[in-house]
Amino acid sequence: MKNWNITSFVFLLIVVSFQFSTINSSLFAQAKKNKARINADLVNIIGGEKYLNIKASARINKKTVEVSNIELTIYQELNDQEIELGKTTTDGSGISKFKIENFNSLEADSTGIYNLSVSFPGNDAFKKASRSVSFRKASIKANWIVKDSINYVSAKLLDVMTDSSVAEAALDVRVDRLFRPLRIGDTSFETDENGEIEVAIEDGIPGVDGNLKLEVVLNESDDYGTVIASVVAPIGTVIVDESTYDQRTMWSPRGKTPIFLLTLTFSFIFVVWGIFIYLFINLVRIFKS
Image (cartoon, rainbow, N blue to C red; front, side, top):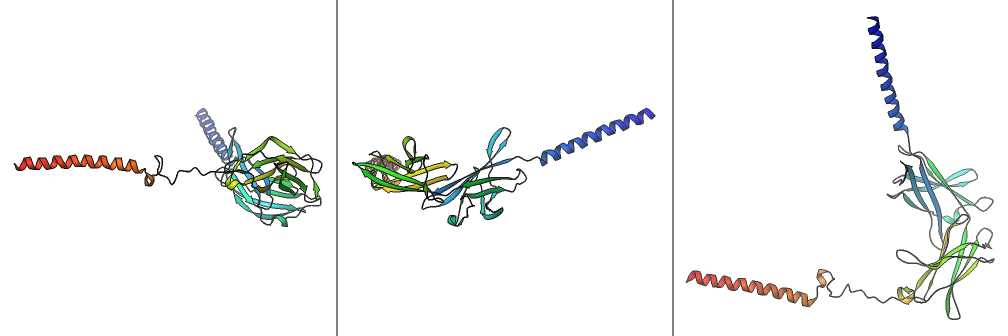
């Protein structure tokens, strides 16, 4: 009897221990959160909008996935203080574009550097995360010039804080397009000691009404972010509208069906119905006779 009681007690202890470990494992699994990663880059369009390109992702089961529909807060960091600039939410691809209102009212620190941060407070699935974005203000002055009957785009890169040129910086030159810019040259063009470049624009590039929107881009600089300046030049080849949308062609919508095809189709219909009517009349005559 005593042995039986000891055996029952041991068995009960094993069952309780198993259930307790199972509950702990379940709670641990529920409490475990994935780590979110935030990337942010400044885009400064000269004479246009300034914004942060933000992308949120996470590493789950050894795969990088987008973190969608999370709210992010953007701050300016100045003198150990955080000044809220606004909030944004990532889309289905984990991407968000936060437009910086009153960009010129941002304050730099004593070294001329602007410090922003993107903060995610965390939720049930992801831990909190943040990303700092530091940059100096830069400006690009772009112009279209002609030398010896050759078209050039010239540009000068300046540091706004020091009002000095930036040498040995890689600038891209491209033509703005609807889907993807057309790059001029196989590589970037490095600024000289005066922060300037001159790039020849080849003939024959098509443009609406013969106009080309030329862009000079400082791309993802560690110091200045992405800076874009543009200039419109009437040096393109005029695009000839070869659209046949308003013409009656075989590939047009139903309302633009070719006349000959309509005539042929209705002729077949009239002939077929004429045969049916003729046969019907003859059947009526035979029935009456």
